[in-house]
Image (cartoon, rainbow, N blue to C red; front, side, top):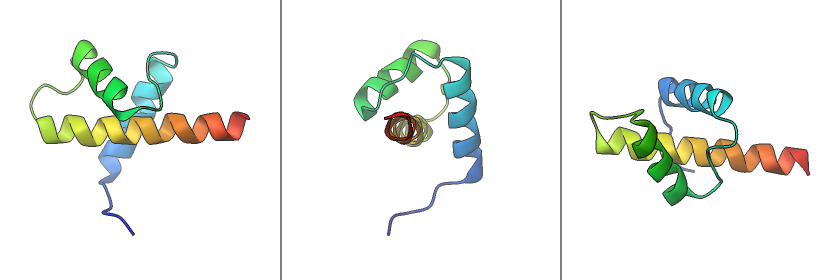
Length: 67
């Protein structure tokens, strides 16, 4: 069992994934770099990392459902 993230992170991840569908990959490092390019989270490195992980997990699950 892992640590639960706040609902705001999941909502923001879904919103970013819907806005930029081809921009993110299922790799955490790539998602983190893309968030830096988009300047989606400028105030906290920890929040950026959590959001990058949520987006990467969302992309990964979307790929598995599509296959």
